[in-house]
Amino acid sequence: MPAKKTPRKKTEPKASRPHMPGYGLPKGRKGLLPWKWALERLQNSHNYWIATTRADSSPHVMVQHRTAITQGTQLGGQSQVRHLH
Image (cartoon, rainbow, N blue to C red; front, side, top):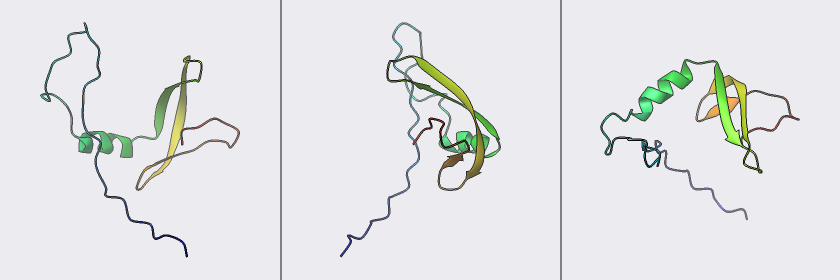
């Protein structure tokens, strides 16, 4: 008998600052934007620039076209193209 899947609790991403010593980034949470702010912009956009690094640490940037946002972001593309999973 297959195990029952427990529904995941929906949580919003936690706002934080990058660790960049010497760049003078402010401390604390003042000025951080809420997830709702980001989600509204994602839902109203059609194109996204996705930046990642390859296994050899070289940068990789490509444009992606959004097809739908429901529970997550669905990005379009061809099957032979390397994508985020």
